[in-house]
Image 1 (spheres, rainbow, N blue to C red):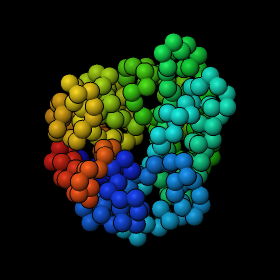
Image 2: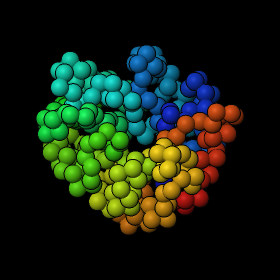
Image 3: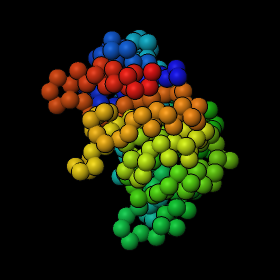
Length: 266
């Protein structure tokens, strides 16, 4: 498989985008995956251009633009102002993706709270993602829905049904996170269930007893089965690490994790 490797901003070794891109390029990465954050670089035209220039100058592509803001402003929220803010954030992500020449934006489709009306949340999530996908389609940007620990879409079958409910609004896909897939079952079964819906892959490992993510090969995931499943469904796209930088010597994490990803997937 001819995978390309990226690093999500969760693991950036510095707060300076130019220095981060230099470290990633020197390590051998193909891409950098920035997060849309409140008051971050991607919220302004100048910041987006600075990010684009840093990536280009170091020979890096931007596979996707992600965010954590949809946990704060859920696309399934019963509060219309909160939901609309989540949609507006996604629109801004699309605008950033255009500047960065990114293929997709990554979204969390819903956040389900205890006692919430699941069906109502589901319907609002569908409505929100359809609106986002339509806006993104006009900009030739895809919308990748990530499997996360949000008590929503508990199985690959349900995940596919959700994507089918929004696919006529624009280009939608699954951004499959291996570690999160282990949280809700076995990642290889998720991969085979999602199959051609998968447009990109995030990697992290998972420690069952500690109930937290960790670096690939340091947890309980059966990576051999993951690699086999990706091969079986013919996936040969981006694989990006979504794990934190080391507390000490953070610049050492990107090359270490890239070595691990290459060991696993090549």
